[in-house]
Length: 249
Image (cartoon, one colour):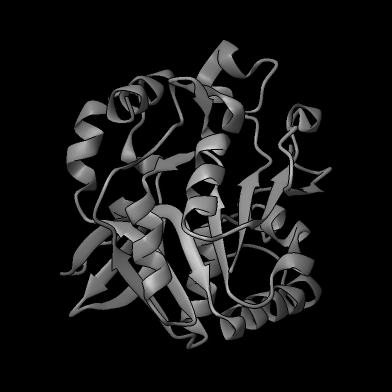
């Protein structure tokens, strides 16, 4: 099992905190976001770790990890950054956004599920956003589940009204060897053949991971939404940072 951490973004909503430092390196009670991720991965036996960097790449100085640089980080989105590391996407692999914190059992739950694509989701997201008043859920990614099955992966919550359970995408997902092959081959095909809008993105280069996952879903890929039990949080704003400090004292 390998891990890829997508950590190329700027994190401008954190203001002066990311003026000279990438968001994934922001300190949370003495350890950076990514340092915490690496510790958890190694604790559960994931030792081959790749970090996709972009903004302030020279600030990343962790030992015994692989680095892949996305030189276009300022003009593209998550999916493009992930695919900069496509040579690393093979076999069993866990993929994580670089701005989330989680405890060990979150990852342990994902690793237990055998499916081509396993996506970590949060069903109680409404409660968490009651505290995140400066970070509205309109900027989040969602997965609709009906009778235990995924029926849509999307961004614009207002446009989705079907009777189902709406969960939030946590920024964690796992690929089997088959899933890894499918996702890289599909993206290579899209690079050569797709133009214009791509699901909820204005273009393929601006596609978030949720857009790519929706593409896989529409192409019949076997995927599962796993409701995660345990502590995790995303850090986009200074208020989020304070919440994380309290959650992970």
